[in-house]
Amino acid sequence: MTADRPFIPFGKPMIDQAAKQAVLDVLDSGVLVHGGVTPDFEAAFAERVGVKHAVAVSSCTSGLYLAMFCKGIGPGDAVAAPAMTHVATAHAIELLGARPVFVDVEPGTGNMNPDGLAAAVDREPALRAAIPVHYLGLPCDMTRLQAIAEAAGIWLLEDCALAMDARHGERKAGGLGLAGAFSFYPVKHMTSIEGGMATTDDDELAFEMRRRRAFGYNRMLGDRTRPGLYDVDCLGGNFRMSEVEAAVGLAQLARLDAFQADRARNDAILRTALADQPALHVFPNKAGESISSHYCFNIILPKDGSIDRARMQDGLKAHGIGTSIHYPGAVPLFTYYKERYGAQFGDYPVAEWLGDQTISLPIGPHVSEDDAHHIAQSVIAVLQTS
Ligand SMILES: Cc1ncc(COP(=O)(O)O)c(C=O)c1O
Image (cartoon, rainbow, N blue to C red; front, side):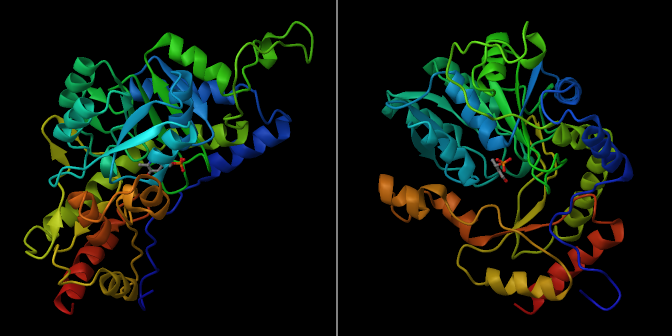
C-alpha cells in the first residue's frame, strides 16, 4: 500500500448487493441443489457464449474431466495439452487414467503450437483428443487446430478458464470445439464462488454430461414419479453446482458487460504505456482471427534472466500492486509429471521461458483507470531500478 492509495490486488471478486440478495433468496427457499436457478444460469450462459448447451459443474477442472469421461477417454488413450497451462488441464487427463501428450506453445501468443499438435498426431496413435488452452484469454488458432484435429479424427476440448467472451472469427470461445470448459473461481472474469460451465453444441454429449454430473441417475429430482425412486444406468460422479453458486453466477452475468469494458480499458492503458519498454515482451490482445478476453496483462522479462522476476514482483508490491504468475512452470516439468514421464529441462523452451519470466498484472474491474496508469508507471519505475 502506498500512502494515498489502497493496495491493488491481482484479482478481486466484485460481489454487489443484488448477488448477496440472490444468495439470501436461495437460502430462504430451502432448495439448495437441484432447483430452478441453475437451469436459468445455464440458459443465460449458453446464450452469452452462443452455444446450444451449457452444463453447470463444480469447477472448470470437473468440466474438462466430465467432457472427456463422457467421450469414454481412459486408460490407453492419450490427450494433447499445451506445456504452458494451469496444471488442471493435464490433471483432468491424468485423473481419467489417460496420458497427457505435451505440446510446446507459440512464442508470439503462449498458445498451443499447431505444428506441435500436428507432430503429436503423427507420433501418437493413441491420441484421441486435444485441449487447446486459450492462454490468458487469447483464443488459440482454432481454425488450424480444428483442421489438424479433423484430419486426424480427434476432437478438441477448449479450456476456456480465462477466455470468457473471447472470440475467434464469428464465434466465441466455448463454441469452437466439440466442448469447452469455463471457470468461475473468484478472480476470473465472473465468479460463482467455486464453479464452472461445460459448453457444447452436441446434444448427445450435453445429455451425457447432465446425467453423469449427478451419479448417472436415470431420473433427476423433478422427473421422479415417486420421491427417492430412480435407477442408475451409467457411471457418474457428483460434479454439480449448488443453487447458491448459480445465483451468484447469474448476478455476475448481469454485470459482465461492464466488467469486460473495464478490462479492455485497463488493457489498453497498460499496452500503450508499456509499448516502448525494450526490456519487456508483451503478447498481443489480437492475433489473426482471435480477440482476447483481457484476463490479465502479462509482461515477460528477458530470457537471459537479466531482470530478476522476484525483485520485480517485490518492487511492484512496494508500489501497492499485487501480481500473479501464469503459470509457474512448464507442466511436464512439475515434479509429478517429470517423475512420471521423464521430461528434461530444455524440452519445452517457450513454456519454460514463460514459466520463468512472465508476470501477470491486474486489469480486472477492481482496477480503476487511475489505478491502471499507476500500475504502468510503477512498472517503468521498478524496471529502472532493476
Ligand atoms: C487454464 C486453466 N484451466 C483450468 C483451471 C482450473 O479452474 P478451476 O479452479 O475452476 O477448476 C485454471 C485455473 O485458474 C486455469 O487457469
